[in-house]
Amino acid sequence: MARLVAVCTVHQLRPDASTIGVTAIDKRAVDGAVKIGPYGVYADVQADRKHHGGLDKALYAYAEEDAAFWASELGRDLPPGWFGENLRVEGIDVNAALVGERWQIGPRVVVEVTMPRTPCQTFARWVGGDDERGWVKRFSEARRLGPYLRVVEKGRVQAGDGITVIQRPDGAPSILDIYRGP
Image 1 (tube, rainbow, N blue to C red):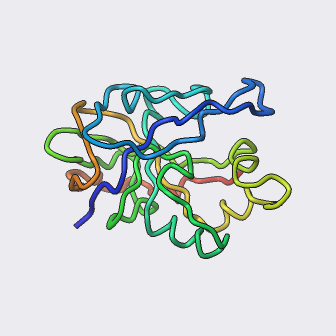
Image 2 (cartoon, one colour):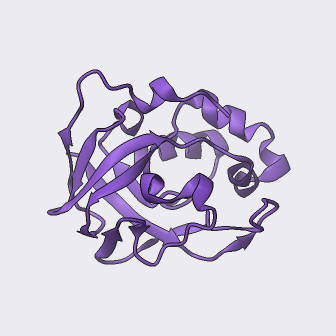
């Protein structure tokens, strides 16, 4: 059964070379039930809503299975939140998710898949800058992107909650079908 491994929020804003000047990519798991509303996890920060937030990118989900792949590739521990995700999940193939697919998380929250994450230079700097040259291309080519989600029904979620796919639109493309690369 698919489940929520962790809910993550910003740990601290970090200086960044982007036009915004800061990034909220430093996310960490939080304990207990957390509110989910139209703009995502309560008390989270989206420093750059144009590229990493807003209603259609309220939440970012990343799979534990994909994190394990990268932990092996990079030779280091990649705890929940390391990819800048709000939701670390397992048992659901997030990269095969269809645009418009809906998931119920826990007893009440419903989210809808909107688009794939497109890796950016902020993510590359977070991963390791010069130590991981070509990170954006490498991450893209591995096709382990994870989806952005829109919140359809708000409520509370917590680690351990089940995730059920409640709707898969016929004929819709997957997030990988529409991904065009960096």
